[in-house]
Amino acid sequence: MDRLWLGIGSLLGLVGVIMAALAAHALPGRITPEALGLVHTAIEMQMWHALALLGCGILARIGAGPRRVMIAGAAFALGTVLFCGAVYSLALAGVEVPAVAPTGGFLVMAGWVSLGSLAFG
Picture (cartoon, rainbow, N blue to C red):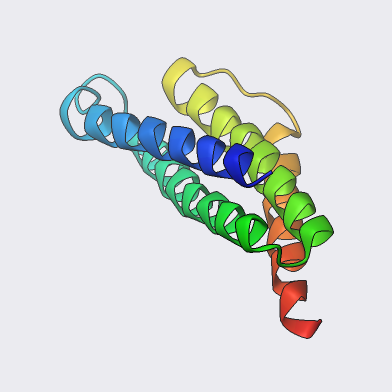
């Protein structure tokens, strides 16, 4: 599982950097300032959780709490895609996908709980 989380984390990081470049250079003036703010929120969440997935990959490699790391990685990966995808969809296309962003947000929170539980044995 270590390679999976490292790979997904790296991919999310790459896409986050691409989105940040677009937000800085291509999107201003093409979308509203409010929509640009949403894009920045999605980028921030995406980049933080890309790093969290890299952490899951490292923890999986050293064998720390394999079940909890797997749960955390899956929650981070799916939650980030759902949350950020819904926010990008709203900001860039004006398409609101009901309940997807909150579901993604819940999943990334669950990922943090699962990862944090490693501190308690």
